[in-house]
Image (cartoon, rainbow, N blue to C red; front, side, top):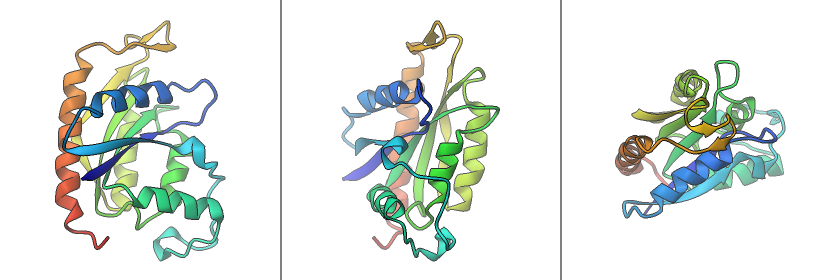
Length: 186
């Protein structure tokens, strides 16, 4: 069975990413095309990239990198839940991606963004970043507004219409993950 991670892409105190990730996971768990699991980057306590060699070389030396690499390698695809901070993704998410290379390669990803503009600018940047580590990103995405999907700008209460878009995104990530699995030698 395919394994797809719902990546919680913020470590900020008071973050909204965990509530959004749990919503994605809750709606994905009834699916039969893949097994979905929460992957919270905060759990790995990654410092700013501190490996002496480029990730493309695959010679990780730090225990936190080895643990992160081992976990990411177990997945066939990803749904990145990303905030938009200053028109981009969180530095913590960018850093977590930058730590690895082969563990991302030939896998699929989709995005659930949130922010004043639905996280769309953060998602656009993540598409470029992930292309460099050979992740294929699906077109569909969910864009959650701080103005209409968070009560008083803080409590996550998504509009019901987002569920259809989320299901389309999950369909695409599952389908692409299955297709790309055949290209990997794991």
